[in-house]
Image (cartoon, rainbow, N blue to C red):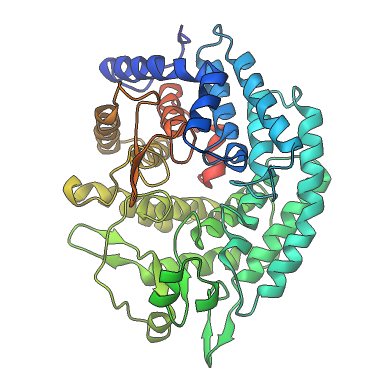
Length: 440
């Protein structure tokens, strides 16, 4: 039964529909064996099961949230069973990095959220934290060596890099973790220093052609580019540096680094007939000429779109106490809804590149600046997600990409992420888990 003090924000009908969907979908997660069998049938690897994006860590976070709103249904015990699965997989050597989304920082985040009081899995998280901190200097040595023109997005990004690991470390209150966080901040401040490249002064987060992630990107960007996304681009460091600044972790040059990245986004903001958009990337040639070649293309996703970027700018505005930047970020976000839904880039109900991510960020902007317009946008997005539910599917939803649609039990690309967003609406508060998306 739902806690009586929840559901303060949704209309009675929205509360009913959201709660009914959660009640249906939570049942599949009550059986860890069935979820494990599904993973096996779909060919997920043991590595997949250990990562925050699609595996057990995200489901552990979901069970913690279900335990919070359904406190008498035993979800803590269910979560413990998933954590036991996860511990066995980790002990068998299926994790290869300290990263947030594919490594130990994500597992430690799940353990912390599942324990609630930070005591239940204290021994587990102590071991994980010691390893993450010990590994940090190796990662920093590699990343610092790449500064000056050889930066790889995995040096600094949210998914694999120092932004994601640093964001995990912020929440730890011991002195060693704070020292480690400061090291990550110092690297990211250094990342914003200008460099000389092909006889031009450019920003330090420039990524060369040879360090592009995909072969088609190497062809598209023969002289390299600057990535603007939140998941893999400079919006992630902007969010992290701003969150650290607001948390009192401040070093020399940090404020200027935040301001420099903000200025970069203002420089490369484009306008279509409905409002502001940003490109996924800026080509080296465009940066040098200060002119964007392409026609503006809207993107409504968390990972590479207007929502993630505008929220990063909102965090920067809060850190800098900049009212004009705050308005700028809110305006950019709200202009999303001026565009007809028929031209939106998103099709999936999921978080990464879908409606759940846009819905959660809408809720974050609403909590920061409550108004009836955002409330109406939120209602519309809830309906989009509810309309994509298919009761014939074990996990209720399909995530769509260039390969088609597929079910996924996990957080980034699957049903766990959708449910976490819906639960956050019932609770009417910023979710503890949203730090993994660099949204706090």
